[in-house]
Image 1: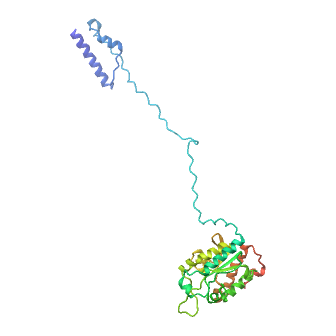
Image 2: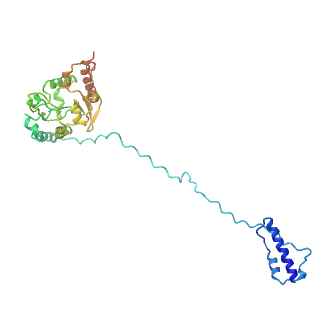
Length: 310
């Protein structure tokens, strides 16, 4: 029995080693074979001359394939829409809303109160000490056209009215050339007092930045009460006081600007035209006035259009 067992074991080992040499790593054994091996070994049960080959090995059962991974592909409906682009801030400040209409009596009372405060002002001690009068302004409080100059000169300081000297006479002619009387417009200055000139018997000086900042609230209130449709700034100092621009008047004149929602036209001061009698310079000022007339919807004749043309 022992010899038969040894022969069987040796044959089995040789068979398995042959499978191994051929690359087989797993051998399947049927249940019947396992039961037979568990029984007592009998010599008659084996035919050693022609040993029964073991059952053909079966290929190892491959692991079950993984289920394909599902990737989420958004549909057009599931794709979130991009947020709307943010509009850039406006490059220009929108005009303020229109002011409510003023009752005529309330307007007259406000104008009188403003004038009284200006006449009593002593915020600039040097100007209050040297002035003869406070030059508040003159003209129609309901005017559609308002002129703003620099500051009173000696004549204005003496008479208490803006633009009454030689420059004022020329301004009056310019106003009349548009077809309006001087009384139909309003005329005021950035400064209500004449800038002092210590040690000088005559002459004028430009207001300082501090003097303009102190006095200009009176002008703001005047404009808010008058509510003109068009403003004309006479000279560089008037432009600086109203718009805060220190660019030369040569570059600013002839182009529209906006002051507190009101169209503003810068032009040369009449005193400049007194110093420069060139027809070309007079024409520039007149072209500015033609633009003002068009803005106001005033009629313009061919004669007016041809003023100061060679």
